[in-house]
Image 1 (tube, one colour):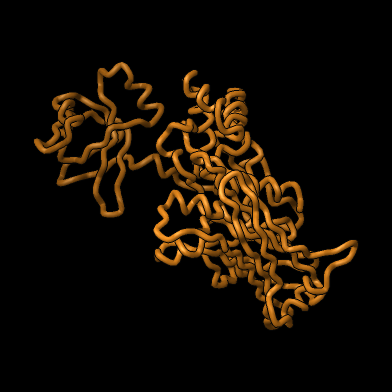
Image 2: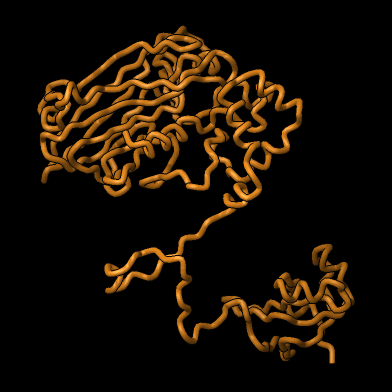
Length: 400
């Protein structure tokens, strides 16, 4: 599997693993919190909101000899609060230097039974028994519908609480399909009846599908500015890095005494430089409009697009407006006279003189007057930055 795809799966696998402030004593870190939970069957059968399996279904365009590989990645509870270890079970698609006949998509389509593997995975907590099964159904025009089903077959007692069930569950369960000669059709364009998972295309050649635990676009990528996984349920990376840097000495000591995975993450985040954090604030890629010549040049450019001639500035507003016979003009003077039911900030300005900086008219024809307050030491700054106070026409009286 390509290194870029491996890094993506590792990042997805640990989303929700631990939550800020990452200390083991925090209530929200008392149990595992990831997405994509596959419970033991006896526990799942008692609730309508739980599953004992995931099933990834998607469409593949490939010749009959194309080799399909399947695997599942997951976390298994380590027996200590939120701690867990990464697990993996593969359905081997090749032997030696050639592909196995039973793993070709053509052979899968005519087989009487799915290609299946069952195994017991040892963990720091309870051992888990799971099964992975792959099947195919031939469609029209060289297309196949593939099904990858992952089941949790771990035994558990009746009456188990959720914490006990999580100890016997697959956490952050990600089924993955890859093909050697062919390409998958986007599950977003041709959806199938997947269960408990959200499949999306991955890989530069559309030769992989990941059954994600959260809704993602096709071809999800880790931003090049990223400093690495932070675990905290898709929280903003820039914000988390800043939060980690203000952890107290006591909180860091708690982290260092426990989970090595969190300890390594916190050390990496704490080492981020101001420039690296600033790079996370945002990035914009500009693209020229598509036209007949687009094939002859790169779709992407660092130069901003040219503004069409004669385009009006929507932020400039109107030069003047008339409301109930009263004429307002940009640059004119008014006195603030808010209604008795106006908010406190408006009433504090009652009687103050102001300058009209913007006159905006909304789609319903209502006039909004953006003003700065005369005598305010920050009036010029407010004018230049566009931080205006807006009033309706009846809330001001024209001066002069």
